Image (cartoon, rainbow, N blue to C red; front, side, top):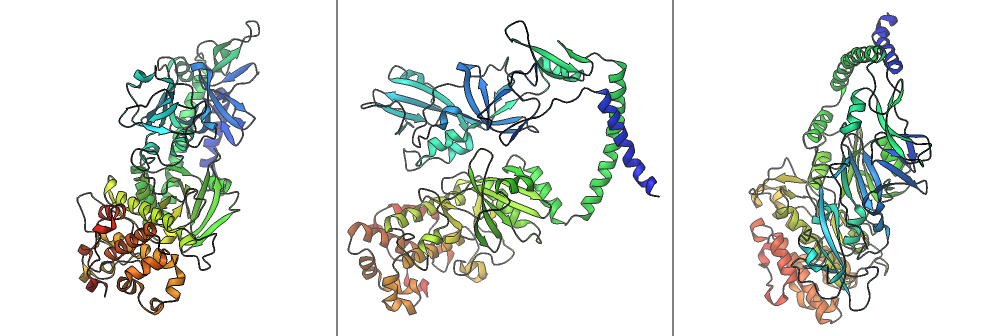
Length: 613
């Protein structure tokens, strides 16, 4: 009985062993740091032969970083990741390693001869142009002036043209260098700060993030070699100064063209096809068996991710997650969803890995998180870098926010000087969150309602720039739609809009996020000045109601009679009161919220008091 069960499994293995004898051995893998370099890439070394595509030889610098040297001035590009299944390579200019936050100093225009090179740029890339050390101001409409450029001196200025700068060669006589650099298009879209300037450090971060190259498979001389059953590569001449010549590695030995069709190879191909067919039948049966045993939500998630393959970020295995977190060594936080751990990608970038604890549901929150945030690209929205879906193991990999959440600073119970933020900083954070929500509500291809805006879900980067995170409860709707249908109340008590609880208050829409935002801003105001709250009757009264009645006194006391700060405090309070109106139609849109915060307080009127009851 046992023999009859194992015989079908044993036969394909015997077939594969026959194929292994009939076909040439594969090119061996090589290691460089924590990256594995495999065919068609190869490491340049002093051996007698190298197996791989022309132009895809890598140098392992300091035994840690694979580096691609392109023909243009023999310039070096760091290789951060190779996706062998999609034939793509993530690289960055080695000159971007210089730690100039405001202005990376690049020197080489990347040009690729598509007629001879196996590499080419991808559709995800977009160009920007640097103008270094210019003797006069640049009048380009979208030019951003940069600071901190290497080689700059008094009287000289440097610029970046984010639109690509076609025609910028006209400024070559005015500037020491004009360098065109490819970057990731999605990264570029979210780098803009205040009008006319890039976000702090964004240009350097964008260039260091690099761009994508694609390599052609099975083309030219290599294609002929591979179709004949061989592996293409090079051999070093022993007499011609070590010159390299193309070689096709075959089972009968290396040739200068392609492998011969020996009976042994033909027999191996036939056996291989038979084995593949047998394995295909077994694999189909195994997959069918596994799919029947899986939970109902897993096929749904997998199907959705496959249909939206170009939308979601890189998928990692659970082994990758354990490796990047060093087996979950550093825990950043804990919540109802699970825990967050600190980690590092293979390129050294720090990340925050959120491990989802509850995998018993239908997977809606996981799909929402991956799909919602993958549709966004904004300086005030946290970047999702990858995810893991492997059985019951689910993880989301975000950019690392060194200053943690807003709750840590604005709502600390101790409110020590270390964790306390100034009124100016709180105001900047309030505007940043408003811009992020405005983008979600009207700036995306698909509108996104977050449904869980609260201090814990606002993360702060090294510059205290706020980024909205945690899209597990988010809902998507078409641009022209405003009302949203939901299965039940969602969100956090204290921040949930009335209409989410009961339809008698109105329809659920983007205005539900406006309410949560208003409650958070008013809480920021109240938490910032605990002394005023403790010494007043507000401690025993609903704070928004109390502050409505004592607005002027509170603003002066909280700001210690500083005119500019008084205006900031007043703006936050009045905008917050408008946002928490009970009826959704009485609340402003997030676009209007941004306008009120950026405008003058003289144009701000208090909302009707009756709506606060």
